[in-house]
Image (cartoon, rainbow, N blue to C red; front, side, top):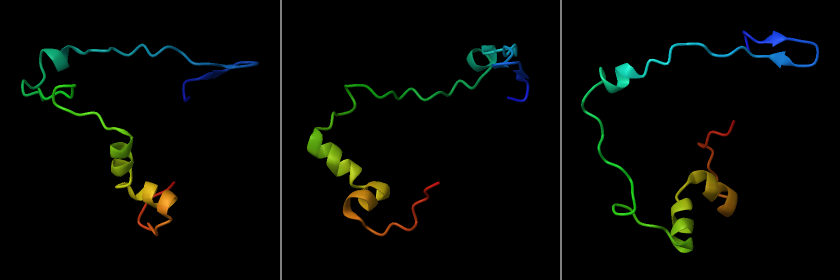
Length: 76
């Protein structure tokens, strides 16, 4: 809020009038773009048990549920 203007009861934040030049990403950018997309034909849906099994691989979940010592987990 560096550019914000403090008024009596509120802050006024000016509009961002920068140029949104997306042309370079569509006409000047690299041609090599990942064509791999995630959709229902190349993925699978997890049921409840599959979701639990996947979540239990996360150290933060294991710490909360199994009370394991995960001292290497970063928690802000």
